[in-house]
Amino acid sequence: MARRVPLMSRFTVEFRIYGRALDPGAMTELLALKPCQVVMPGTRRGSRIVEEAMWAFNGSEDGVADSPEWSTLEEGLKSVLEKLWSRRDLIAQYNGASRKIWWCGQFHAGWNSGTALPASLLTELAEFSADLFIDTYVSETD
Image (cartoon, rainbow, N blue to C red):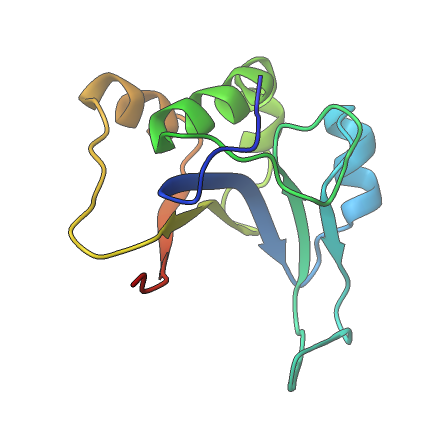
């Protein structure tokens, strides 16, 4: 179960699908999962206008947008992967027509930290034909 963890090291994970012709409502219905984020083309995000639709799932059963946090990246990826594993053939229908990524947020309170992932987990992630993107955020401490 995801939980709030101390600032020292925490991770968020989302499986995201992007596409110009992507219909997030159809994606939600097909997978029978509530997304944590849906973005439609033409939506303003910061200073830019989004050109592709996006559907994102963070492992939350109720589609809560506030991403769960994990103390390790492996724990977060396994949690989301577990909920998507039985749906991987359905997700494969979007191969070629959309981009898929495992989006991971890595939050650290200082420098000199990192993470490692076991080869077995990387093999499972590869079943989704999705890139792995790790966005790292560091806040300096006194």
